[in-house]
Image 1 (cartoon, rainbow, N blue to C red):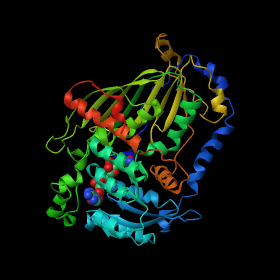
Image 2: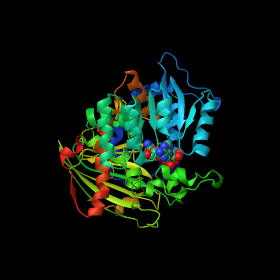
Image 3: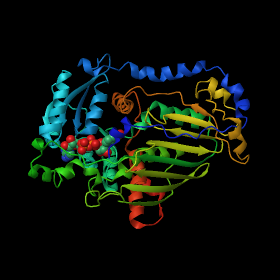
Length: 477
Ligand SMILES: NC(=O)c1ccc[n+]([C@@H]2O[C@H](COP(=O)([O-])OP(=O)(O)OC[C@H]3O[C@@H](n4cnc5c(N)ncnc54)[C@H](O)[C@@H]3O)[C@@H](O)[C@H]2O)c1
C-alpha cells in the first residue's frame, strides 16, 4: 500500500460505450460554442505556480525574490517526506535548516545529502526534541512521520513556537487529533493538515465555480469514492542499513518489518481506509458542506495475512449526510488486491454528475449534464467547463437493440483545470503563504479533526458491526 506508487500507474476507468439516441442533434449547438475563455482560465490558474518552478536537476534552490525567508525543518524523511521536500524545493523563500529522522543511516542521510546538492547545509537529528532545543530560529516544521507520532510531534513543535504542516491522517486516535487542535489554538501557531486536494486548483474550481456558483449538479443525491490498489509485497529495507533493535523499540517499533509497514498495524496506522480513504472522504465533507450523520461499514482482512496486516485490507462504507439541500448517501470503497480504475470521486445530482481525481493520469475531471437540465452554454462560454465531447454514434444495428426506456449516457464536458506542478506543492504554498500572512490555511486543524473523526469512525463501525451515529458535537473541539 502507498499512495505514491498508485499515482504513477493510474488507468482511465472503463467508459460506457456511447449510446446513440439523437443527442448529437440536441447538443449540436453546444459543440460549436466558442471556447475562447477556456484556455485563458486554465492558464491564469497555473500562472501563480509557474513562477515558483525550478528544475531540480540544475541543483539550484528556487530564488527567494522579494519573499521573506522561512526557516524550515522536515520531521520524517521517508517516502512522503521526500515527496514534500521535492515540492518545497520548488517554492521560493524557504531555507532548510534540519532533517530529523530516526533512520539516521539511510533516510536521514539521503535527504541531508539531497539538500546539500541544493546548497543548503541542514543539520541531521534523530530526536526531534534535540532539534527543537538546538534549532532556535526555525519558523516551521513539516511532519511526515507515521500517523501514531503525529500528535506528539505536532503538539511539541507548536508548543515550541513553530508553525506546523502535518501529514494526514492527523492522528491515529481522536484524542491525539484533539490535542493538536488545542495546541494550535493555545499557541496561536498555524497547523495545516496534509489533505492536499483542498489546495488543488481543479478541486477548488469544482467546489467554487461548478458546484458553488453555477450549481451544475443541482440537488446532489449520492456521492461515491474509491481507491483500488494492486497487490503489493511488504516493504523491505537494505539489510546493511537496518536500525538497531534498541533504537527501534525506543521509537515504538517492534522490528524492521513493522517499522517499514507501520500502516497495517493497530496502534501505529489505520489501514487503507485511513491511509487512502481519508483524502477522498475529506472531499465528501468539503463538497457536501457538512460532516455525515451516520456511517455503516463492512470490512476485513480478506486477502492478506492478518498476522502482518492487522488493519482491514478491504472496506466498503456508506455515509449518510443531512445537507441543507436534503439527504445525501455517499459510498466509499478501498481494496488492496486489484488496482483497476484507480482512485476518483463522483458526485451525482438531479442535473449533472461530476467525476474527479487528484490523478492527472486518470479521471482528472469531467462533468456530465442530465438531459433534462438547463443548457450549460453559458458555463462553456465562461470557460468553466469545456465544450461537450459528443459520444460516438454506433452503427444502426446497435441502435436497434437499445431499449428506448434506457437512460442515455450524457456527453462529457472536461473540467479545464490541470495541475502541472507536483500534487502537494499548492498545499505547501498555501501553508507558507499563511505564515507570511498572505493566505488563509486551506486545511486548518479543525477541518483535519472533522475529517479524522469521519474516517476513524469507519473502523469503529466495522468493529461494532453496527450503523453508528455521529453526534454533531463530536466534530467540535
Ligand atoms: N498526503 C499524501 O498524499 C500522503 C502520501 C503518503 C503518505 N502520507 C503520510 O505521510 C506520513 C509518512 O508516510 P510515509 O509513506 O513517508 O512513511 P515512511 O515509513 O516511508 O516514512 C516515515 C519516516 O519517518 C521516520 N520516523 C518514524 N518515527 C519517527 C520519529 N519518532 N521521529 C523521527 N522520524 C521518525 C522513519 O524513519 C521514516 O523515514 C504518514 O502520515 C502518511 O499517512 C501522505
